[in-house]
Amino acid sequence: MQYVIDSLVIVKLITSVDERYKSNADLLLIQGEQLHVLELVKHEIGNVILKAKKQTLPNAKQALAFFYTIPFVFHAIDEISSVQIYRLAQKYHLTFYDASFVQLSHQLKLPFVTGDMKHHGKIKEITIIPISQYGQIQLDN
Image (cartoon, rainbow, N blue to C red):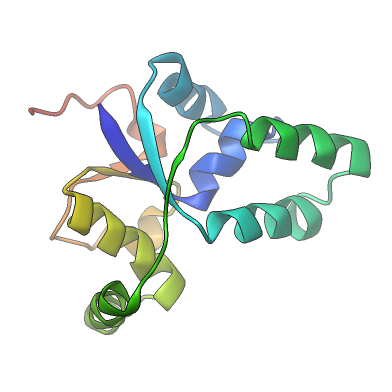
């Protein structure tokens, strides 16, 4: 199966510090799922490890090294997708950043696994799977 995942799910994959639902995120890798992400997560992951998780340099190096071993399929944002992202952000009162994951999921016609149901739970155009429920929900394909 293939999924779009957001930065919150990636953080659960690569760090072990106080990560709720880490085992659900790990299941994505164990099951060999193909994981689609936006190029911008490379910056976001660094910021989260540095600012939110306040990792030491050795722990950050370990998390970043693991991040780059995961065979993510990276996607860039272009002019056309930017306009679609903007529309989604306006429609659902999301940040451009949050809407970008929704747009990628919609474009690829893939389910979106997220750690942020507060913002993404109201989206109707795509299948949303909360990381808290990944592994419990069966999708028909």
